[in-house]
Length: 132
Image (cartoon, helix red, strand yellow):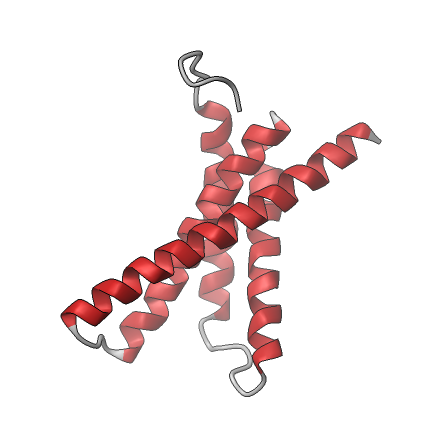
């Protein structure tokens, strides 16, 4: 039972960190867009997929560090839950619904979450900054 609680906690914290990182990255890209001018619509759609993928990378990394094992399933589940939250938020908005790039965002989120989970296990713990 403790392993299941640890897994659920790791995925939940990873998803929250992924969402926060995605929001911060979106704000940075919005500031860049305001200073440089509007970008084409196709580019912003792919940029949102990249932001979601980078958020899943960070979330998978943190979730794997918390779980201290099983990087691929933990990272993949973190990416999957991240895309589920994104789709639920998109559907709750009403008229926007789910876009045509859902498959690309799904693949980016899950694969980058898996990569983050692997990197989270491969990184060595440093005694200088403490343990995660």
